Length: 356
Image 1 (tube, rainbow, N blue to C red):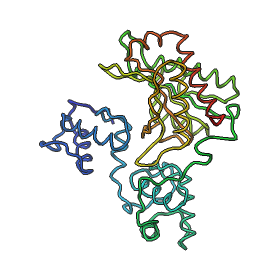
Image 2: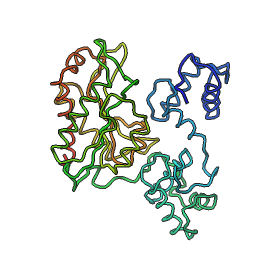
Image 3: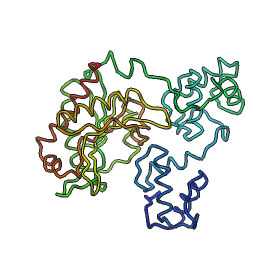
Image 4: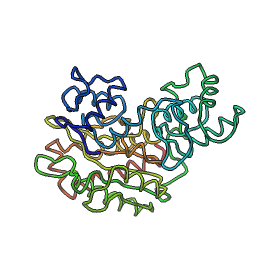
């Protein structure tokens, strides 16, 4: 579908409003009228906030998919492993329940993948059910009866990663790394006051980071290596196809009309679940970038961004500086500063793999 924003009208807007309303979001006194007005924008922002998405009031690909998936209730459909996989709120509830019971369903991402199937089979085996990997009413009934503390869907439940979030026993020389320069082609990203396009800076830093990783022995791939458009879900598909160990998405921050500054990094988080390794890696990257670039460190943030949710490996999105910060923008336009950015990210990666 096309991107929908304030001022748009039509059947697609009607669909968005209907979905928001069915989920309990107030779309205003005029209700479902097909006009993307202020009330609809506010409802979209509230949904994005609650879903851990970028809160911009715009219905793009990621927000639309989350809206579609949010409608599924547990038991509404038969769940099993298939291609493409089942996705939705019912899968997310299943994963959370399995993890709460001690059956490792992996990341609570709302995607029925291999780990979720293995957890279902393990649960069926331990519950005396037919081991077919099918999640129907009989599985859900048993699961509800045996859930710890009578609360199968606690937002605080998660299966922690081993080694406290550190990827010990591995080194950069053993890694397959996919680097994702954000935006590209017709999608320019943020544009600074002096005309610097985010897409160009993202690619420049990504290439330099890739060179450093390759020199360290990593096997490096890029979601794009030129000024071309790459779809949001194509980026994570590439990383999954390469069976990557790490996914690093490079962006640069922007805050219109503000004096915001600082280094930021994001890891996958969704309704109480978070990637422990992603969080730990993001913290190392933020500390390194802030220290080496002389900006403040914004605490690592959990978000439900598509490139973090759809990737099967440890994934982060890093924004070294704000392009809206005039002082940083002047520096960011130079090759020297781009090398400093890439070097700071690389140093954070080395510190992470050294376990401290």
